[in-house]
Image (tube, rainbow, N blue to C red):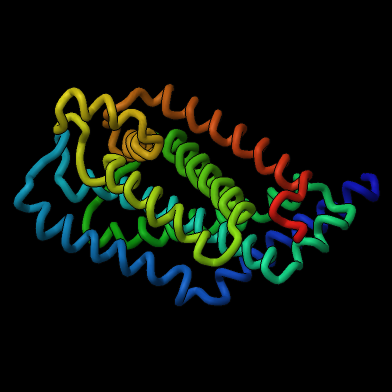
Length: 259
C-alpha cells in the first residue's frame, strides 16, 4: 500500500469519526427530536386519523404510512447533517486546511457524505424500532429496501453538501429544507397513494423525485407501489452519480470555500 493511499485512508477515517462523533455527542438534539416527531405522526395520523380512513392499497393506514415516515426521517437527517457540518467548516475556515492538504477531494466528500448517511440510517433504525410499538411490519424485499434507503441517504447527503457550498450565511442552509424539501416530502406520497388523485395531478406528481424514493421503499417493505421500481432505482443511481460529480467539481474549484 502506497503512502498516498495510506494517508487518504487515515484522513477518511478521521473525517468520518469526527462527523459521527459530532452528532452522537449531541444526540438529544440530533437523534431524539426526530424520534419524538415520528411517534407523534404514528399516534396522530396512524392511530387516531388512520382508524377513520381505513385501508389503503390493501393495508391499514398505519402500515401504509410507516415506510414513508421512515424515508422522511432519512431525507431530513442525512441532508441537515452534511449541510450544517460542512457550512460550519466553511464558517470556521477549517475547510481551507483540508483543501490545501494532500488529501484527495474524493476523500473529503466521501467523509462528509458518510457522516450524513450514517445519521440518516441511525434515525431510520430508531424510527423503525418505534414503529414496532404501533404496527407489525414484515419486509417484503430486503434487498430493495436496503438499496433504496442507502441511495436516498446518499442523494440527500450530497445535496446537503451542494447547499453548504453555495450558502453564504446560516439562513441559507435552511431555505432549501423549508421551501423545497418539506413541500416535496409531504407531496411525495408519504400519507397517500397518488391513485387517489386526478389523472392530471398523478402525472404532475411523477415529477417529484421524492415520490419515487418513497414508493420504492414502500415496495421493499409492503410490496406495493404507485410507480415502476426499476425506473425509481435507475433515477436514484443517476442522481447519486450526477451529484457526486458536481460535488467533486465544486471541491476542486474551491468555489464558495476560499474566501
